[in-house]
Image (cartoon, rainbow, N blue to C red; front, side, top):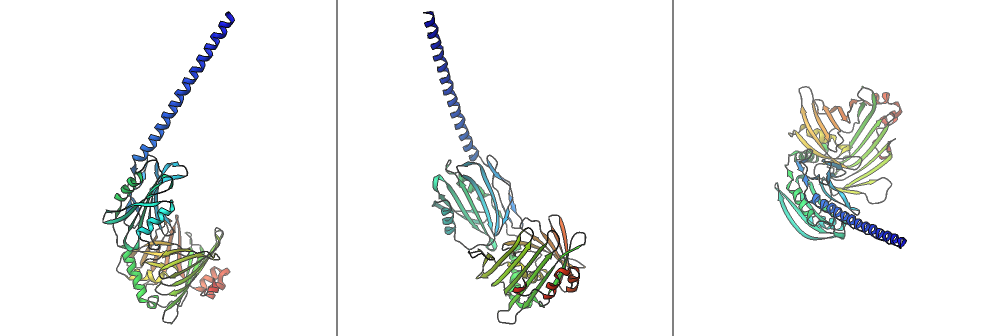
Length: 444
């Protein structure tokens, strides 16, 4: 009996312990459920109550905009340059599967024209969705066309496009995952309301300068058949490289222009670049080949051509279709930039912006300011790609460049006008190129 009582009591104690464990497990599950619901609620609340950045200005453009920041949203607070424009974005820190909610704005410099409908259909295709609603907002004298797009898996996007002065365009995309309908629309409208834009007149002034060069044709290029040399010196005054530029006008109806450029820098970071241009003096139709060889990049080749205002860029030796950009009225190939700078110096405009097509095959705005002094006149150039590259070009009394001071990444270089003989003496390893003038395709 006693033994049985012990066993019975032990059984009761076992059952009691088992019941307690079940109770604890139920409590634990309830706590987990509450915490999960609380976390989900917190995520929703964080995404509903969203702060915005202070206005983020795009340098020299007259444009500023605010983006989601904090409460789960992250924004680095600056515009970043890419090949044909600038972008600023904000992303939500919590992913839903492989998709992350984001808001993104792009300031497009040059691209093929698309209607708002075409733009919205492309965005819809990118997320496997369809346009379900369209509308139009007006802010700060700007018109923003928009579309709401329903995508796969509950994705929702609101896409907008706004035309700006000088053929520029602002594109706005807000994408949200499917856990809170209406959030994308809310964020989009707040982004749109934050837009501030004032045309500073720099781009129209640049367009006017480029147009004057186009009208003048061969006259604006002057006596270009003589090559121009500059010796490159570092901050210590040591000669480290040189440049050589040649132009030649062909006497025909199209006033065809041939131009060649060559840059050489010796040393551990040796660089050798050469380019060849053939086209009209109006820049509206041309071919441009560029080659570079350096320890960092190896051998690089770029081929560019323009037809009907569309720039096509291909890497040499690659058969597939290259990138295409629609050039604006202020677009100028870098290799024949000098006549445009000369016109900028002589124009009545104090500040201008032009779009420079660079040898690498991209387009970047360049801000130019005229500096008039008692001893010499000069132009200050600021490349607006975030690199910090600046150049000041000094001119003599006949408006010919005689000196260039370059600043980039806290380093200063100077280019001084030189003769072929001076270049050959300082750089005997390239003397044969100097006297050959490099004015042919074979020269590069």
